[in-house]
Image (cartoon, rainbow, N blue to C red):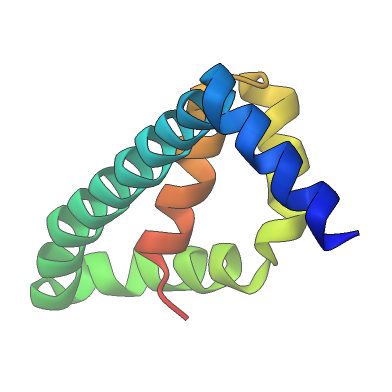
Length: 99
């Protein structure tokens, strides 16, 4: 059994499929990290410094954070399709709300 997995790994690696999927995953992860970090930095400072904005935004942010990502991921796929965008947005949510 492990030798079958190893042989399949070698065949995917030699055929170029593995590199293609690794590159797609790296694009999704880095895109989500950059988007989530940028949103966190751009929203975090004003929310922390402006009391009115904090009182308005925090309840929505807590509500959004309380919903599990596994519940939102299928909705993202329905709303944004199966391409890069839905996966980048899920990764951005994870980066924006670190657990």
